[in-house]
Length: 531
Image (tube, rainbow, N blue to C red; front, side):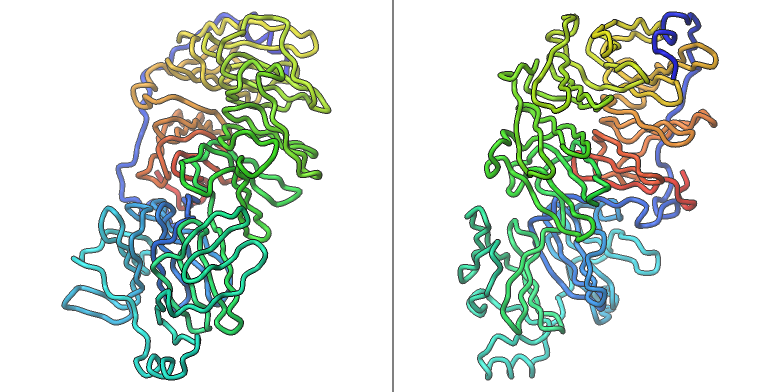
C-alpha cells in the first residue's frame, strides 16, 4: 500500500453521488431466510421453563430465548431466539404438545412458547417460529399414573418419566468441587454466591432430572448416582461490545457492558468443549472493571479496553493487570485497540496512547493535538495509523512519532468521524454527517451525504467482504454492494438481536455481530439469502 500522504495531498477531485436509497425488509421473512441464517447467543443464565420432546429437551430462558439439548446426540444445538422468529427472548413457559386437541386448536408434536408478547408456535414443516392462534397454553405431558403410584410406594428417588418433583422430594445431591447443593433448593457457586433452583423441572426417559436455576443456567441430576451438575450455555449478563476468536485455542472471548444481573463479566466460550465461563472483576485480582468495549490479542497476551483502563491478560500465566490514568493513560475510558507492527495503540476518550513490547509501559504522543480529544476508531495502512476523532481524521506515523491532521476534501464535513477502515488502498470514513471513501484509481473522494436520513444513528464500525462494505450502526447492519451501488439496512425484522450494532467480525461467509441484546451470527453469503 502506498503512503497515505499521497492519498490526501496529491488529490483534488471530489464526487458527490446522487441520492442513494437504502432498502429495508418489505418481504415475508422466511421466504427469504432459513431459520439458521441468523443465530443469536443472548444471556440465558436464568431458566424459566423446561419440557421434553421426542428428540430434544427445551429450556425457556428469561433473556436468551430457548436452549435445546439433543437427547440422542447428547449435545447442545444452537438456541432459538428472535433471530429464529420468536417475538421475544423472554420465555415464560414452553410446552411440547403431544396429543391433538381440535377444540383448542392444538396440534400434536408442536412446540408452544409463551413469551411476554404472546404465544408463539414452531412450525415443523416451514421450520420457523410464528404467532400461535390459541388462547391459552397446553398442559405439559403428565407421567403415567401407575408409574407415579409405584414410585410413591417405593419411596425412593427414581422418579418416572415426565414427573416434576417438588423441592421436598429432591435428594441431597452430590456435586463437583465448583458447586455445593444445600437442600431444599439452594446451590452455592465457587464464589460462595447463593443461587436457587427454579420452579420448573422434569424427568426424561433416561432417568435424568432437568432443573431450572436463577443464574447458573441448566442443572441436571443423574437419578442413579444423584450427582447434580450445572451447565452455562450462553454469554453472561452483558450487552456485547466486541469479541475475538483465538484460533490456536478454539476459544472466543466476548466483552460487553454488564446489565446488573449476575453472573456478568467477560464471557469465554470454549468452542471445542462447548463450555462457557465468566470472568468477573470482583473475583479476579488485577481486573478493575468487567465492562469491556474492545479486545485485541497476540500469541502471548489478550488486551481489553474497559471503562476503567487497559487490561492485559497473560495467556500462559493466566494473570491480569490493569493500566489506568495513574500509569499515564490519557483516559480510563478505552474506545478502540489496534495492534500495529507489535505496538498496541490505545484510543481513549481523551487522546491516544501506545504501548510497545513487552507491554509494560504506557507512552504518550509528543504532539499534543489530540490531548483531551476523543479518539473513536483506528485503522492501519502499511506505515501509518489512521485515527477517527471528534475533530476529524488524523494520521500518526510511528517511525517519526509524527501526528498530522488530514484534510479529507470530501463533499461532507470531516468533523466527528466515528469509524475508519482501509481496504485495497481505499480509505472509508463514516461520521455524524455521512459516509465517504477515497478511490485511489480515480484519485477522488466519493461521498454519500443522504445516507444519514435512512440511518440516523451513530456509525460504529466499518468492515469488508468481497465487493461489500459493512457498517455497524445504531440503526442496524448497513450493507453497501459497490458493484450494484446498492444499499440495504438489516434490522431486527431480518434477524438481528438488536438494531444497535457495535462491532462486526468477519469469519469467511459469516458475520459475528456484537449487539445490545446478544451476539448475532449472520450467514450472509448463503444462496437462499435473498433481499
